[in-house]
Image 1 (cartoon, rainbow, N blue to C red):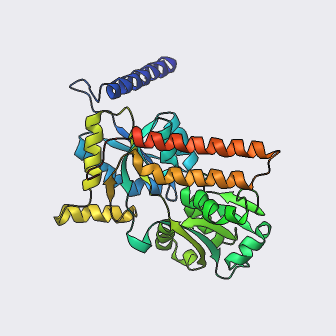
Image 2 (image 1 turned 45 degrees about the horizontal axis):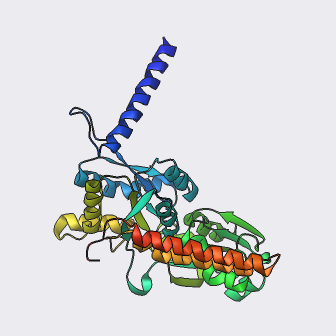
Length: 348
């Protein structure tokens, strides 16, 4: 009997998954007595997966009510896990770094729905380098002068503030390859890299102003040990993306929900603004299309170009061939983002 029961359960699960796929293909069509297929929202990790999911829960509940369909959080522990989930089509909608969004869009999986607006003016989202106030490393000159002496904690290679922007603006111009130049390196979330420096497990960490603000709220004792020794220009904004094969009506309703979230007056608007503040998106979300990723494409181009210029080549011809390929790749990305973007954003 147990074997039969397991077989029946597997059969039921298979039928359920098959129906879920059919429902998506039909734009959510379903039998009268069935529940709508949940929309799966991919969540980048703030710190832990549970913490990130809990912070997003109120907005996802409001989103589900607005579109008449449940929205479930797909919370992961790393950028890599979310990237793999996107490739396996396990996510329908997600908030991604500009780099991850660029990859998802240029691969034809997703299209931009809205752009995250964190802060205005000089307080905008920027990459930073953190060290301990009482540590052996206290200034940028010592870091750049002898990187091999120091232990680095950094973000995933798909993190704009944790990897890409420090490379483009600071390390590569000083002919320092971030992956190999340091004594050791730890690759983890922004919370984990800040903790590593605060606790003496690393000498310097890449991070960003938004996550550092969140870190100060959650770990005030550890945050008091840290100081910033470098700050970047504003980073390309994070994006909320939706599967490219999603029904147009779903795209329209989600985009309208995000663009209007936190904009109303009265108690409802006040409650939504509290949610946005918790997500460190105080200015909410702005409806966008794929052209919002043009700054991210330019940053990726700059990274590839600087890497090529710093590399050792067997011949100048090989170097020029690589540079030509970089130019061609960038031109294709720009053409794709301009010509095959998502729905035109309001007011654009």
